[in-house]
Image (cartoon, rainbow, N blue to C red):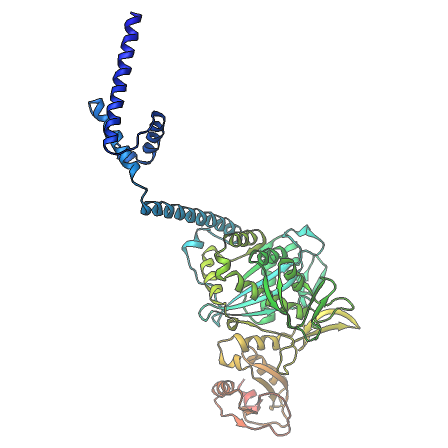
Length: 525
């Protein structure tokens, strides 16, 4: 039995060898290179992995099956891989990579958006909601920064004071924006139990409302209301950022370029921040340098170039924001995945706002269109040029500095509101910002003040007093120049009279228009 088993094995091996020899002869006849059994195994594995769909069913005859496998395999060995097939596979890989990267950033954006914006984060991709607007068709956004390096109240003493306060007024249809910085030291009415006072600096308003219950929204809304009161605007939204947001965003876009502008021919030097630049120099700023320039205000002896102190600092802050906006939306930045990733991280970790998720596409669309410097305007309240007077000035009592105040007087924001309206209002009367003196020619006490109050919401009131002489005529309008035609037209229509060109006899003023209310006006009331 043992010998028979050996003989049977020998016979079977002989048959396989004969089959192999016969296949080799056939392969030589086809001019095909013969492979060893080991190579055959490797090739079979590769062919099975890459050509599963080309497999041939097994025939009932073993010889036919082996033969067809060999023919197919060696026929393929003769043909190089198709260039089209290679290109197709490479293209598929590239597409998969793009999809994976886009998916990664999409997820990151949704995660960051969930922290920054209110509502469903998917709305960032699906909705394009219009922003709320005021009566002039503008959206007003409070942008304020706390001076600490984190959103935590305990970052350092005074970290929750808002040392940067700015309002951006945006027209969604015209794609323009006006930037207005408010002095952090502006002396305002503010009931603040935390600090035990009813008036103080503007940069305390957020902290006073926030500190009661550590309520971010309460603090932001208090500052929105106060900023709107000063500017004569309805502020609809807010953005709260800490200093880390500025440094990280500037670094994420590879730095920004800012032109140094100073009234000092030497340029700018600030010992507190260590910055020193030549006048007219285009300074390339990384995050730390941008923060230093944003904070510099020449507080110490020997500093120069920022004579306006906080006002000069506010102007530099606006310039940095403009440069950052243009750089962040440039093609080079948006095509850089590392930059995009870093910007998303910075916004997610260092920004708080009351915008809804559905507003994101609208905001991005507006920001992408406001790339031309002509569409972004700085509305200055000091150093306005054209010999225009400053609208803020230092406020001292008995030689002690209390802060800044409107030039018109403490808590008197009329000139500031008129200046803002002149630039932002859709009302032609407000845009002309004519100064109107209101005089009492009736002899009835208090009439001029009463009439001035009636006009004050729309017109810029100058002097309120008595006319040189009394008159019976209800209303007389004196047009002192031809620069304010829309205002004169509106007043003529309001009182159904025709304005007189020329000055009122016995009365001198720098106003554009003088209105005298006589006895008939008092009687009609």
